[in-house]
Length: 113
Image (cartoon, rainbow, N blue to C red):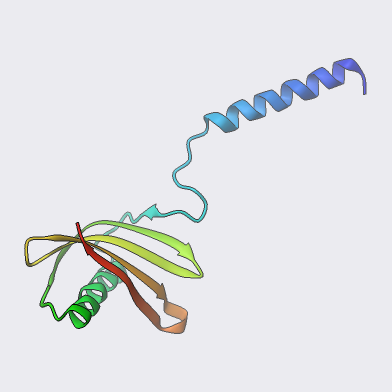
């Protein structure tokens, strides 16, 4: 390889590295991503499931008022991390693991914020 080609290849690598370093990423691969439509019926169903399961486990009588924030993470299924408002005037973070093709859904956590 001639010195000119080496310099050209090096310059190209530097340029590609600079572009890659300056590129903003929305989320890490495998990380949580914002749910754009919190009123989506499926997301609403996941939130209602979280409250119902929490009530069964904790013997509470909470009702879902609204979803404040939502994120999802694709794994071997989908994790939903939802910030919800309940009828007791408190907010909670609920994490639900969902595998709709297996008709499986599980409440991973439900914690007050």
